[in-house]
Length: 466
Ligand SMILES: Cc1ncc(COP(=O)(O)O)c(C=O)c1O
Ligand SMILES: N[C@@H](CCOP(=O)(O)O)C(=O)O
Image (cartoon, rainbow, N blue to C red; front, side, top):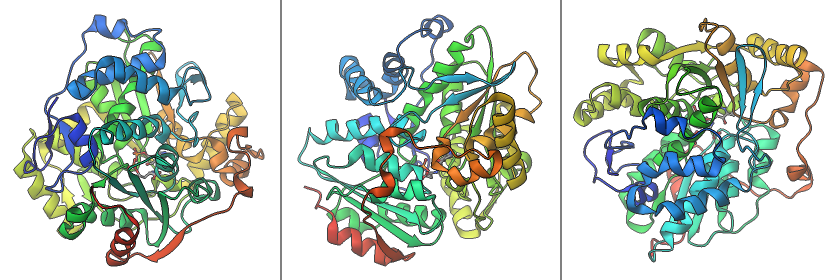
């Protein structure tokens, strides 16, 4: 499979190249040159497969010749063997129409583990084929950071520098990052928002002084391999609920548009999806874009769902590129306009294309709290504030009663115990596997939200390319 940049001016790469490159050299994002498609009988044949095998089947067309099918299956078996639930991503039924897809059974209790456990293994595999060292630079609003660090801590030939907005992640999220003391892990708390951190990460990929000396790599969902691994659980859930004979809708708590874009990819591959509901908190740039075509960056408001406190959604570019006829030059011009004005309008083709599959909703603080309470009082389920945004959107979406609606549960409630306790009176406890988190030593540097300071820190601590 070839990978092309959404901005049309970067080398075409294979899967291995796109995985190691992260961001394209023209500032765009890599996407597959075409969408592979499964037939109805191939989708029907996925029913009952162990998760690791389903994952290998769904991802094989994207991986192409970069790995043999047998090796891919070995890696998925290893990655998903670390999950605490045999089903890897089990589903819980809430009522006649609503289901919750639990994506938090990995080592760091958030959906990011599903992709990052595998990405860590891909890095190791591909780096073993050359003399190259990889310098991963990432931005996190809490969950990507801990999942990425768990996936690469102590691995040879990889250094990871993880930027998080100081004071804007939960205590559990911060400690999951800062208590990992492996010498190749560098936590950086910046004075700024997640968007500031993400902008600095993207800038480093285009900083010639840095890219001449270091092979900069990505663990954020700008890296295509992240999204590819997330496509799998849409198939897993839909097939359990009767696909391909029956359509399913998904409600997805959304920030950087990665998780829900993986749902779009599943639909492109032939999975019958009735609707993808894009659920934001009050940081609602995506809700505004999808409901009125207005993609304009507001200021970030801190919420009880901090991992979604995002106002520039990287992966939206992938959707706009696909819906806009895959015109790299036009996409580059549209994004240049956005970077200059902090605002852009979607074209008619982009708006109409999106409306065919997506709808959206915004959840405020009261709606989040009342949804957490509803799930506890009516279904006996503790859900975290991010999942609550998804469930609120699902329950108010007006999807036909004959269509099952699956809300993606993106984090374990114990990552956000205060918000859950405020709504339910019940404090969720951390699973035993992370139980001593609050007794561990922390290591983190604080830097100003200033690109030069971050680049200097990375340059001082990273291993040169080769
Ligand atoms: C718990 C949680 N829910 C939802 C999201 C949003 O996912 P995405 O950025 O892929 O839209 C994130 C992080 O982004 C998250 O950590
Ligand atoms: N919510 C994320 C933000 C980064 O998103 P990513 O999916 O692009 O890595 C986080 O938890 O860090």
